[in-house]
Image (cartoon, rainbow, N blue to C red; front, side):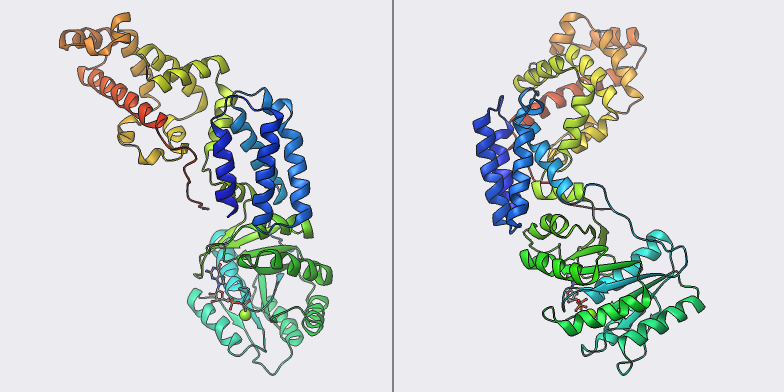
Length: 440
Ligand code: GDP
Ligand code: MG
């Protein structure tokens, strides 16, 4: 898949000290193949690779502290851009109800998504939606929506299967006004393939209800097909957004990458399962992370680059690698880390960090940092470089000098020992550990 392939490539360059143009070229070839393999539209791939290459051979990368990581950062930023950059919003009509039309092929997940979206609108945005059963063709489609409605305790408007969908839609809006619903979600019929009858009916509903949003529901598993579907629905109806369903399955991710750039329609939500709470706002940046499989490592790199003196960082990194790390370095690092924000948060961003033994002991309270500094400052030079000489007599002296308790001195010595152990584990850790993809 795309993620594995890109990760393989990135791992090759991740540890690299310097990259040259030939390295970038090779990487871009891999990226290109990975994207094509993931069923991303050919033209999209071409443009993408061109943009990344231009940036990757530029100063930004060649001059950076960690060029390999910098390239990954560029790839990620461009992936994010490709999927729409900023996260998009959902419409709110100034004259309620806000009307949302759900369209798509049969089996894409329209009915399920209609229920999920209503659920989300109520739970997260405190809205009072009403569902409309306008699929009169598929056997039991009305019943399916009614069952979902019961399940999430949401009203469903239906006139059976003998009234035309256009008439159902029209009456549903009158009813919503009467009952003070602020959102109307119209579940329409689909076909196995796009046809004129389907489009004509959808156009009639559109003309009559003047929807604020027309969401195309597409199955992410269908890859390049999803892009074609999106394109023709967009041409015929003018979509305002796409909902990509079944992203919890084993999808190649290609659809997410092409849809936005081919149709210029933003992906607004993603379906992550069959349950009514399995709908999430689409975050292009997180999707890019998911595709690259890199957790929050980028945020960490960015933070470090913003706050840490590069020379010092290099030196520190070397010491960490050789584990020749003293209390003076520790003190130095505390200062650097303080500038970056809460230490616990930073540690959590490291992929695989949760698997490291002794990590809990390392969580250092912000307000305790001052105490720690005081203790270290009360050590002699010898003690800082060779803490193993610190016996109980020395501990007493250090405690007194810093105004902290012996227990605190002991705790710090233990933490320092653990930290050195952790560094050894880090430097032996396999690179590019995959972290799960979670949205709130
Ligand atoms: P419709 O024909 O477009 O209305 O599609 P349905 O809403 O009836 O969904 C078709 C099937 O896809 C059902 O079995 C749903 O439970 C399933 N489905 C819908 N969305 C998702 C999703 O995000 N993840 C998974 N795993 N299944 C989904
Ligand atoms: Mg349906």
